[in-house]
Length: 193
Image (cartoon, rainbow, N blue to C red; front, top):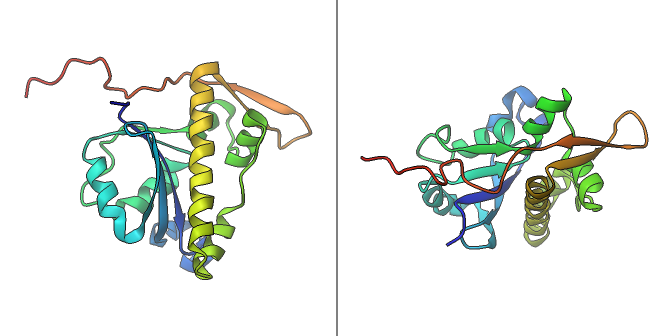
């Protein structure tokens, strides 16, 4: 059995401008959620009506790994989950980098500099795919982001560093990482209850 870790990403049906701006982002609705589950080594898409199945998997308290997930994905996902997600362990790669650098970097910036490949599109493309009924393209885009996030997570774990393209010039920047591919409860004694 694999580790109790899920790398995930959501796509939304609308943009910030459709819900009154960034301050109202929790009004956004999920079109699809993509996930890589280390237990099964499977990539999977959950459409909005299937999120209850994802909620069942979350009952097992996996480590949730994402990119800008604490401040975006998780608050939006919370509307679909009948229990608090605050108790789940989380690793937000963007948050980890921001805490070191003092500024945000994009997934595309980290993917390009670290993996040598960028994203296959943008979040606005995903909204367009949803609105135009191009569900297969939407699902592919979401899973591409999940794969990139997983690959960055694994690279940071193995190499103890990530790279990003600099906003202030042509070069690449480097940031040290300290995570491992393990659930924070691995190796701990089970609770006597």
